[in-house]
Image (cartoon, rainbow, N blue to C red; front, side, top):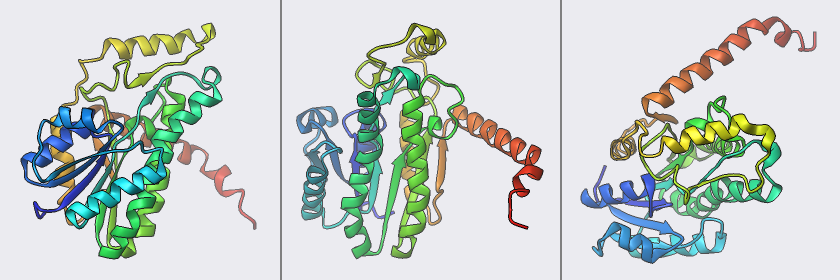
Length: 279
């Protein structure tokens, strides 16, 4: 990939987003990075070089997202790779999460991503090229571990619309990759990134136990965020990039287990499944 190409990254002030910004700048790519606080982003990245453009916007603010993208175009002339990384974790079972808590998670993880895609696609269509990376989660593919029902739903949604998006934008030369990381050693499990139910129910002690296990795992996750970042950059340079891109051995194992379970049910109930067709 031409090192003068421009990447647009949301959720850029922490986690995989920040690692990606730093590696790309070290490799002399142009980076337009969106965060809710541009000053914090600038401080975290620690550079003022020409190829870095910190932008302040909340992905839930469609107009603000559009203005940020316009500034990136004005500075660099094009956007070649988009990484929708903004999001946060929400633990809890469906019954104990309020409508407000649920919608807030969807607003950022789903509708925020849609805002970025909606605002950047006119530019990608016009230039006849581009690559969109939508950061999902292994929990958005295989959520049988439980305890993160709504978060899993938001990340399942990312899988769903990204699959359709890939077909819709292919005629314009735009490619789509769904990134499904496992557990990486970022701040995802820290209080600032992981939200728990405001009104937990005593009945869901098993959910609390799982949350406790995850919190004790903070800082011990097996995934290396720098290696994940390197893998994403590599995928962006591929002629035929993956649509489904799982990161981490744990993600691979959970995906294979899910596929095995689905295939098992398909085979077990095949006779009933096909019996519903009109004769």
